[in-house]
Amino acid sequence: MKIVTFKQGNIAAGSMASAVNLQALPPPTTKRWLARRKAAVVAAVNGGVLTVSDACRRYGLSPEEFAEWERHYEAEGLKGLRAGVRLRNPDYPMN
Image 1 (cartoon, rainbow, N blue to C red):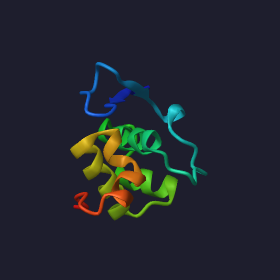
Image 2: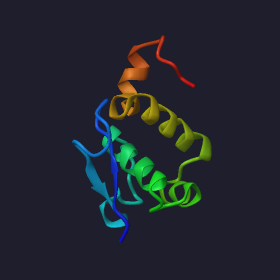
Image 3: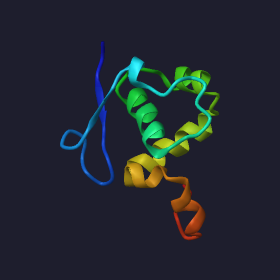
Image 4: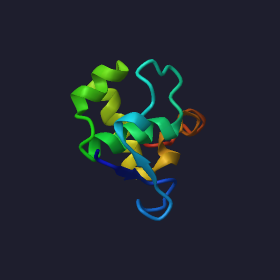
């Protein structure tokens, strides 16, 4: 079983991290995507638990949508994955 971690907020992975494995991922039927759920999927892909194709197929995502999650996560951690941040701030970088 492969375990990977994801960062919370702007804190680097490892200090305040949560373990991600296939069993700990959100269920394939997930409809409400909280930031922590998105981060778990991104961490699973980055850690080799899932491929991008597997994640997109499992969760009904387009490759572009997953790439956006990954971009925002890399830029700002969990904060960047919160939908409200982008919706309330018109100057938020979208790419």
